[in-house]
Image (cartoon, rainbow, N blue to C red; front, side, top):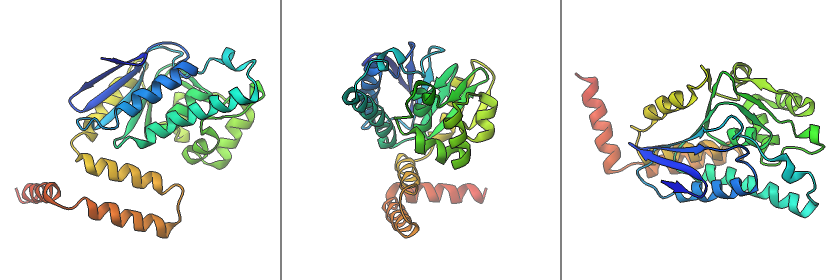
Length: 249
């Protein structure tokens, strides 16, 4: 099926959203992405979402749209990028980026907003906005620092460095680098390891991990206690008894 302008399929608990054209982080693309991601929030059958490359330039903004923007339009452009990232974070299941080709500027920020990322060997990454006299505007300034460390992030942004897939893995920007054309396969294999988990557990783990980025330890522990306690009940009991039975076989 299609929602907005990007193909979406759901099979056996795994949703795949394919970015099937160049410059999917353009103005229209960001709005379509936000709508699609929001539509998935209540899909109880989904355990993982893969955002996959369907074009070598899909993880890019359209710089031509920015060249003559005024400040008001630029603020709206930035806000729409933040909305995409917020929609990813709001999903109650992990989102995996499967990147082939170029992920620069806003496209790199989309990768950073995903919970996990895998890269084909031809993929490249970078926050190169400084070359155009601007800066990352979809959360890249702080998400990159969280992913690769403060100094490394500053080096990448201040020098507009473009890194390859293997370096991205070394830095921790992506989880793994795989042969070209195999990022979607690697993402699917990872998703299949995720989907056996209880949906409520996935949601609690993801939300508590995100909560931990911006709160004090005592607040994080309180949130963890609440989330943990809320998971107890019928399904949890059945799963734990099944686990115990497996241990004695």
